[in-house]
Length: 342
Image (tube, rainbow, N blue to C red; front, top):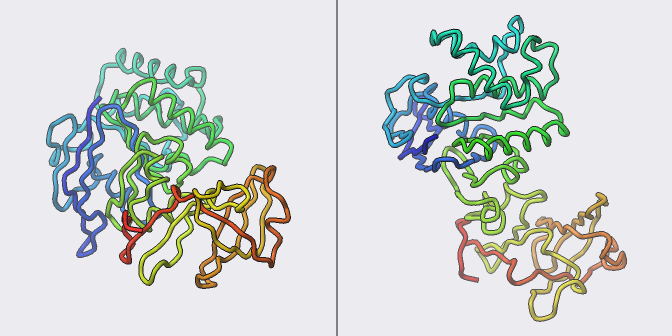
């Protein structure tokens, strides 16, 4: 196992920067998630760590050693891609063994490593099958076993669950996280799915246009976003943002915007809220509308617990007293950066 450190990593394609000076430390044994929209540079950054892309400038250290000029196989890391890339004519055993065979590892050691990796992931009973005989989740575990068979010092995962359906993704997330905690393998996981990021990461690095906007635990990222991008990218529905005091911004999470009757007096800021429509989702009700005193185009979202909300408090077309706990209000300056000034 090893820490992965990047120092001012830049990658340009022509004059266009895909990675714009990222400095990030992933300690030994940490599960770090790189979260951002498609095209933000997170996969390019991961490929630089793996050695499949050469950075334009900056340094990369794995286990304390500078590996800028080392080929991928000499860096001691393994990468699993969005497309599992299993060879259809190979058995599961041969798919897992392939990285070792290309390195001319002795046969007896290959078999030992294949057995170790397949047992670790619970697929040793599938070794004689071919990929077409496997479910999506089983293929995913085979690809992970192939990545682990070389006993890497760090594991790099690029959107590995995007080919699975929603139910299988939930199960696979738990399997990967449980495995990582059990083995203690330094892991960097790329995704655009905030549910994956929040549920799996020890820490999250939010990336936009090749820049790291914020690094923190899921709780820190969600409750204390560093800027408007993080505030509106993380969360479903995202944080409400309204223009405030002629240039700054006021932000609050939908679950903190409640009917006045549900918030203690003296501990909240009250607003008049006109309900336009609501959606009942079983465990919650999402209510959409506008706040009095702000531009009508600034749609506000409230997330309400339906079992505790009086229907009279959310009748569409009417103005209702709502409030936000003062401790839940967040302030951003005119440039979109978080500020402590109210």
